[in-house]
Amino acid sequence: MTSWQLAPEDFDTTDATGLRRDYYAEVAGRYWMRPATTEEIDRGLAGDGAELLTPPTGQFVVGRFDGEAAACGGLLMLDAERAELTRVYLRPAFRGTKGAGLLLELLESEARLLGASRMVLNTRLDLVEARSVYVRHGYREIPAYCTGPYMEIWYGKDLARDGAARV
Image (cartoon, rainbow, N blue to C red; front, side, top):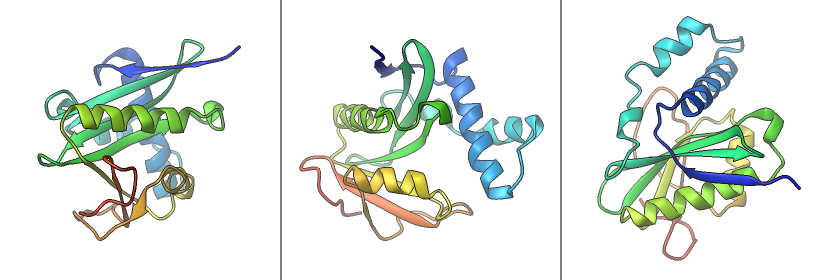
């Protein structure tokens, strides 16, 4: 029987770093419509703020499928009530194995432990698979709570009652 094991992990372990590199390679490559180079991935990860994904400012989680690093995600506390979901990624070979839902559940639980009552996120319109996962797990479109070059749509979820969040 195959199974998922998910747990908080430092963002800079070998497995976490590999997952973060794969995440960046995929989202950047899709945006640029070509594979990202090693140098571009290095630049994208340099100073990306991942060091904030540790308590009390956040959390980083790694998921393993039968022991193999397969998924990751982070949350960043924006204020006393809101946590932002970030760097949610499942390696392609592990998609469709229920890992995304388990990953979101753990990240939401970790956000509650840090005091958050709402989870928010921003993403791009072309990341349709990710957007579908968020909606399927109770996230609803909300007004923009931040701006940036790769932010095109915003979602939120009330963690206290698993409904739509307000910004």
